[in-house]
Image (cartoon, rainbow, N blue to C red; front, side):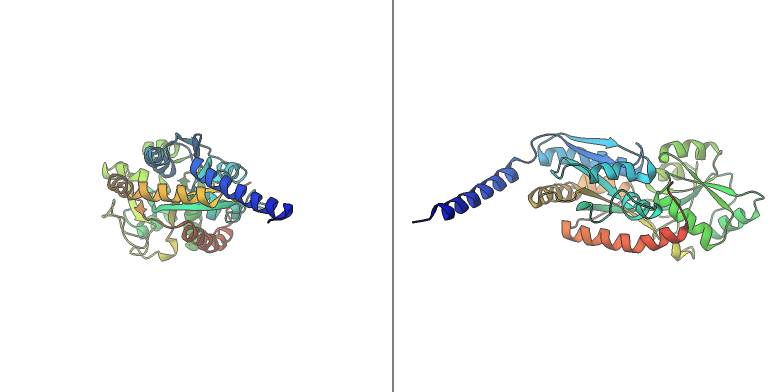
Length: 324
C-alpha cells in the first residue's frame, strides 16, 4: 500500500502529465499573432501574408499579421522576446533583427539566440544592387566607376537602419573606399517612391520587391548578393560572378517564438510552417518572390541562426554602422 507521501507524488505526476497532454491538445485556443519587423510591402511582410491562410487552416485559428517596424527591426523583435512563451506571439524572423541590429547597439534589448525559441525556417532571398535608369552603369565595375566620378557623396537607399541592405551597402563602401552616404527609409515601399522618381539613384534592397520594376525597365539590376544567379532574375549576375565575392549576403526568413515556448507547441508550429511551405502553390509563389524555400527542424533552425549570428556579428561591427 502506498504511503500518503508516495500517493501524493504519484497523483502529482499524473496531474502534470494530464495537464501537459491537455495543453498539447488544446493549443491553440485563440488567435495567433505574427510580428513583422518591417513596414508593409517588404519581403518579410509579403511572406508572412502568403503563409497566413495556410497556417490558419493547419492550426485552426485566426492568424494575424502585425507590422512593427523601427529601430533597425528591434522594436518588433523585442516585443516578441518579451511576450508570454505560449505560442500566441510569433516573430517573422529574418537577418535584420537577429543577425545585424543587435550588433549595432551598445546594449541590445534581447539576445538573438537566447531570447527566442527559433521554430521554423522558411527560406532565403538575396539582396540586389539596383539603380535608376539615369545611372550609366550596368555592371558592378561600372557602378564603382560612376560613384568615384561624382563630385559629391552618392546617396544609397535601404529599407531601414539595420536592414541587410544597409550593412551590405556599408561593406561595399568600406571595402572599395567609396564616397557614399546611407539614406534609411521606413521600409522598401517608401524608398521605391524616391528611387522610381529619380530623387534617389541607387539602393541595396531585397530582390523580391525590385524584380517587377527591373522587368519593366524602371530600375536596373546590377548584381544579386548571392553566390549564384537568382531564378527569378536570371539575367542579373551574382556578386561572385561580378568579382565581388565579399558581398555575398542572403536574407533568411523564418518563424521564432519567445524563449521557453513549450516543445509541443514548437513542434506544432514547425510542422504547420513546413507543411504550408511545401504546398506546391506556396512553394511556387515563394520561388516567384525570389525566396529559395526549405524546411528545418527547430533544432536545425536554432543551429542555423547561431551560425548566422556568429558569421554576421564581426562584419556588422567592422562596418561601423550604428543604431542610436
